[in-house]
Length: 96
Image (tube, rainbow, N blue to C red):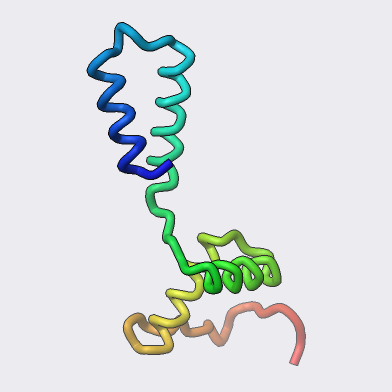
C-alpha cells in the first residue's frame, strides 16, 4: 500500500471514526506507524536493489548500513567529505 493510499485511508477513517471497529483501527494505526518508521527508505531500481542486497550479504551488513557506507565512501573519494585518517599510534588488527 502506498503512502498516499495509507494517508487517504486514515483520513477516511477519521471522518467516520464511530463506524469503524477497534480491530480495524488498530490495523490502520500499526500500518501508519510502520510507514513512519520506514519513511527514510530509499527505493532503487530492481538491478541496483539486487546488487545492493548481494553486496550487503557478502559484507554482513544491513541494507541501510550498506547504503550509508557506499554514500560515505563515494563522498570521501570525491572530496565532498574529509577522508578518515588513521591514527599512527593507534592499535591495528593483524600484522604487517
